[in-house]
Image 1: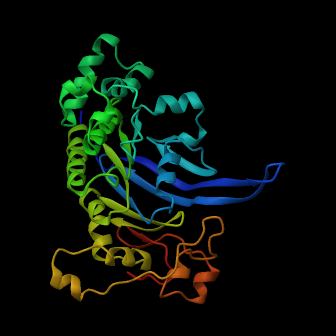
Image 2: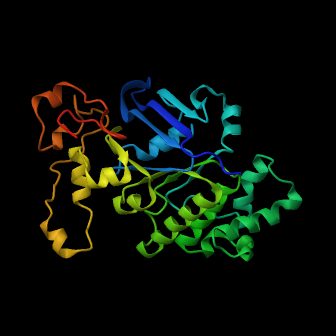
Image 3: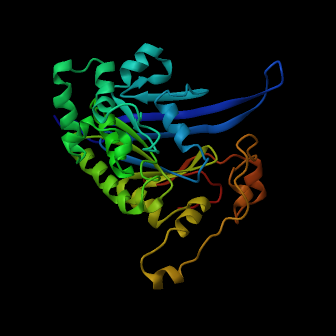
Length: 329
């Protein structure tokens, strides 16, 4: 049965995840890593939200906190209208049937001591979804939909390439027929020649199974290909959210403009004529983020206001939000 589109499946409200820093014999807290610091967005059923940003900006932590693998410091996560942050451990375990994750490293995310069949069937057995007599049939079906041979079920992960291992990871994520899949940089560890194959597979599965994706990545060209909307993250906060065409054609936040200026363009003439924005300096420490706008220490437009007031996400057009004092539609 096809579910109605434009129905909100996931909503994140002011999500905060701080990791305490302890020192000394008495284990005294002396600070905290501000990994995620007030993130808000929503995803409609059947759509893909791309979450992009530099390494260390908090993208993966956001995904894991949504799934409650990390219990958030504060904020709310609503899945199908249910606040996950209020659920007990057993209730969260039950909800995870509907929410799964594809991990970044296909070499580390598969147990080398288990066969492919055991890896894929493990969530089915844990959640009691099928009888043991039906396991083999289910595993073969899952291997087929990710374009792998059913005969691979008795082989071990070390016998496969990186792309094949990631397909096995996708099959495992699909075993419980979830509604939401968080793709945590699922192609960054793969050869460029294989990346497009995995992305095309994810798109085909989305159409076939009506899946909803949070696609975490730093490859802006690939995010543009797969995403309906894109959120740009910097040092634990969202700085811009828009639909795909708006964000790539009319970026308003200086950080987004800098990221997009670094994306290669196939046409050498067009590429040579465009203006590049080279970011100066390093990303500040998440232990002690800058006051006001977190991007101001690297921004060529920064003014005194930027250090005094924290810019909030505000609407500057239809479905276009930006956190910048100076941005205009």
